Length: 177
Image 1 (cartoon, rainbow, N blue to C red):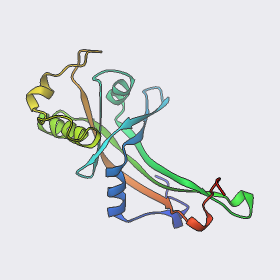
Image 2: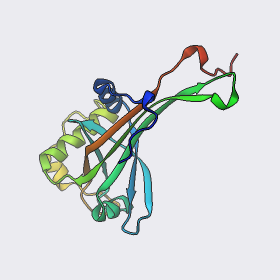
Image 3: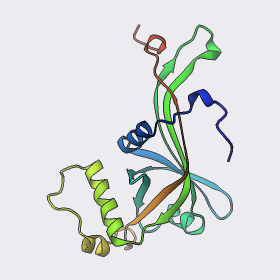
Image 4: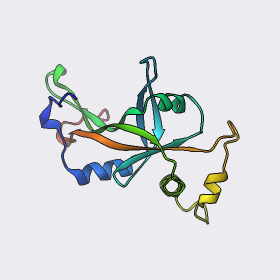
């Protein structure tokens, strides 16, 4: 794996990285099919126990690719604005970004799957349901689109990098001036 060359932008603050991953809602999942064709899609995710969890229907292109190749790249980023400079070519972007390499493993353990799906509900629709998910419900639930159980994948980071270019309020572009 190539090292980050722009070393002054590396973020090693584990607490900041964990908080960022926990707070964001969408990441991009990069995969390669059996013919080597890349496929990248945005997905909702949760960050739990230092792992990324994604979910979806039990069928579809994502599932087909992950059945044949579990190697993935997962990226979460936030663009914070444009940093100005008197020299046009030196204008820049303020951002925070995390890239994770690992394998997307289909979660088979019903307790882990139920807990992960409960975490999704807590993150995306907090307090909407009066009862917690049960393992029996998750086990029996089938999508109306494909009549298959919901799939939950866990990405355990094998390599994680984070980069940032913090906001410099004095030099941020403001179109309202």
